[in-house]
Image (cartoon, rainbow, N blue to C red; front, side, top):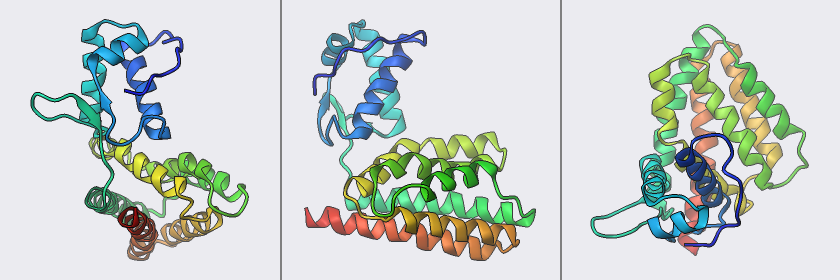
Length: 220
């Protein structure tokens, strides 16, 4: 496993702290796709007991960032075209349903507006810094439903969503101005009560990112 710099674990639980730091290293690309993550290496890197290291690994397996097969160490999930298409298909189903529901009451989430304003303020052109506000925009659509179970379902794939988005912007495939404009169009459709248009715009928005990432992965 990639050696990680020492960092204080803070006041949160040891397992959660290790999980957070490992997740951050994976999503940033510091730990690459396919890299093995062993209990021994995690224990040594963070100075925690093997049971804590094992629990942190299991949390990341559950979130989809790590995969483990019988009698083998966990490893960082490989992002391939099949994975990308499945992740984006899942997103489209959940988010389009959310938009249709929000449009019935013309509810435009304030958190989505704020996140999109951050993207709009960024310089034009592809920028990996768009990943965080972009993800917050889409998550805000789900959170606005105020449904614990829908939110839980969405968050079960959130790490894989972020990993795909990081791949898209890490390869500088999408322009920040285009992302912001497409988000604005989606919210405008919601505000006008046109749920079908909002869902169609979302599908086109996500499909563009999906196709560009699949094309780039297939070219590698």
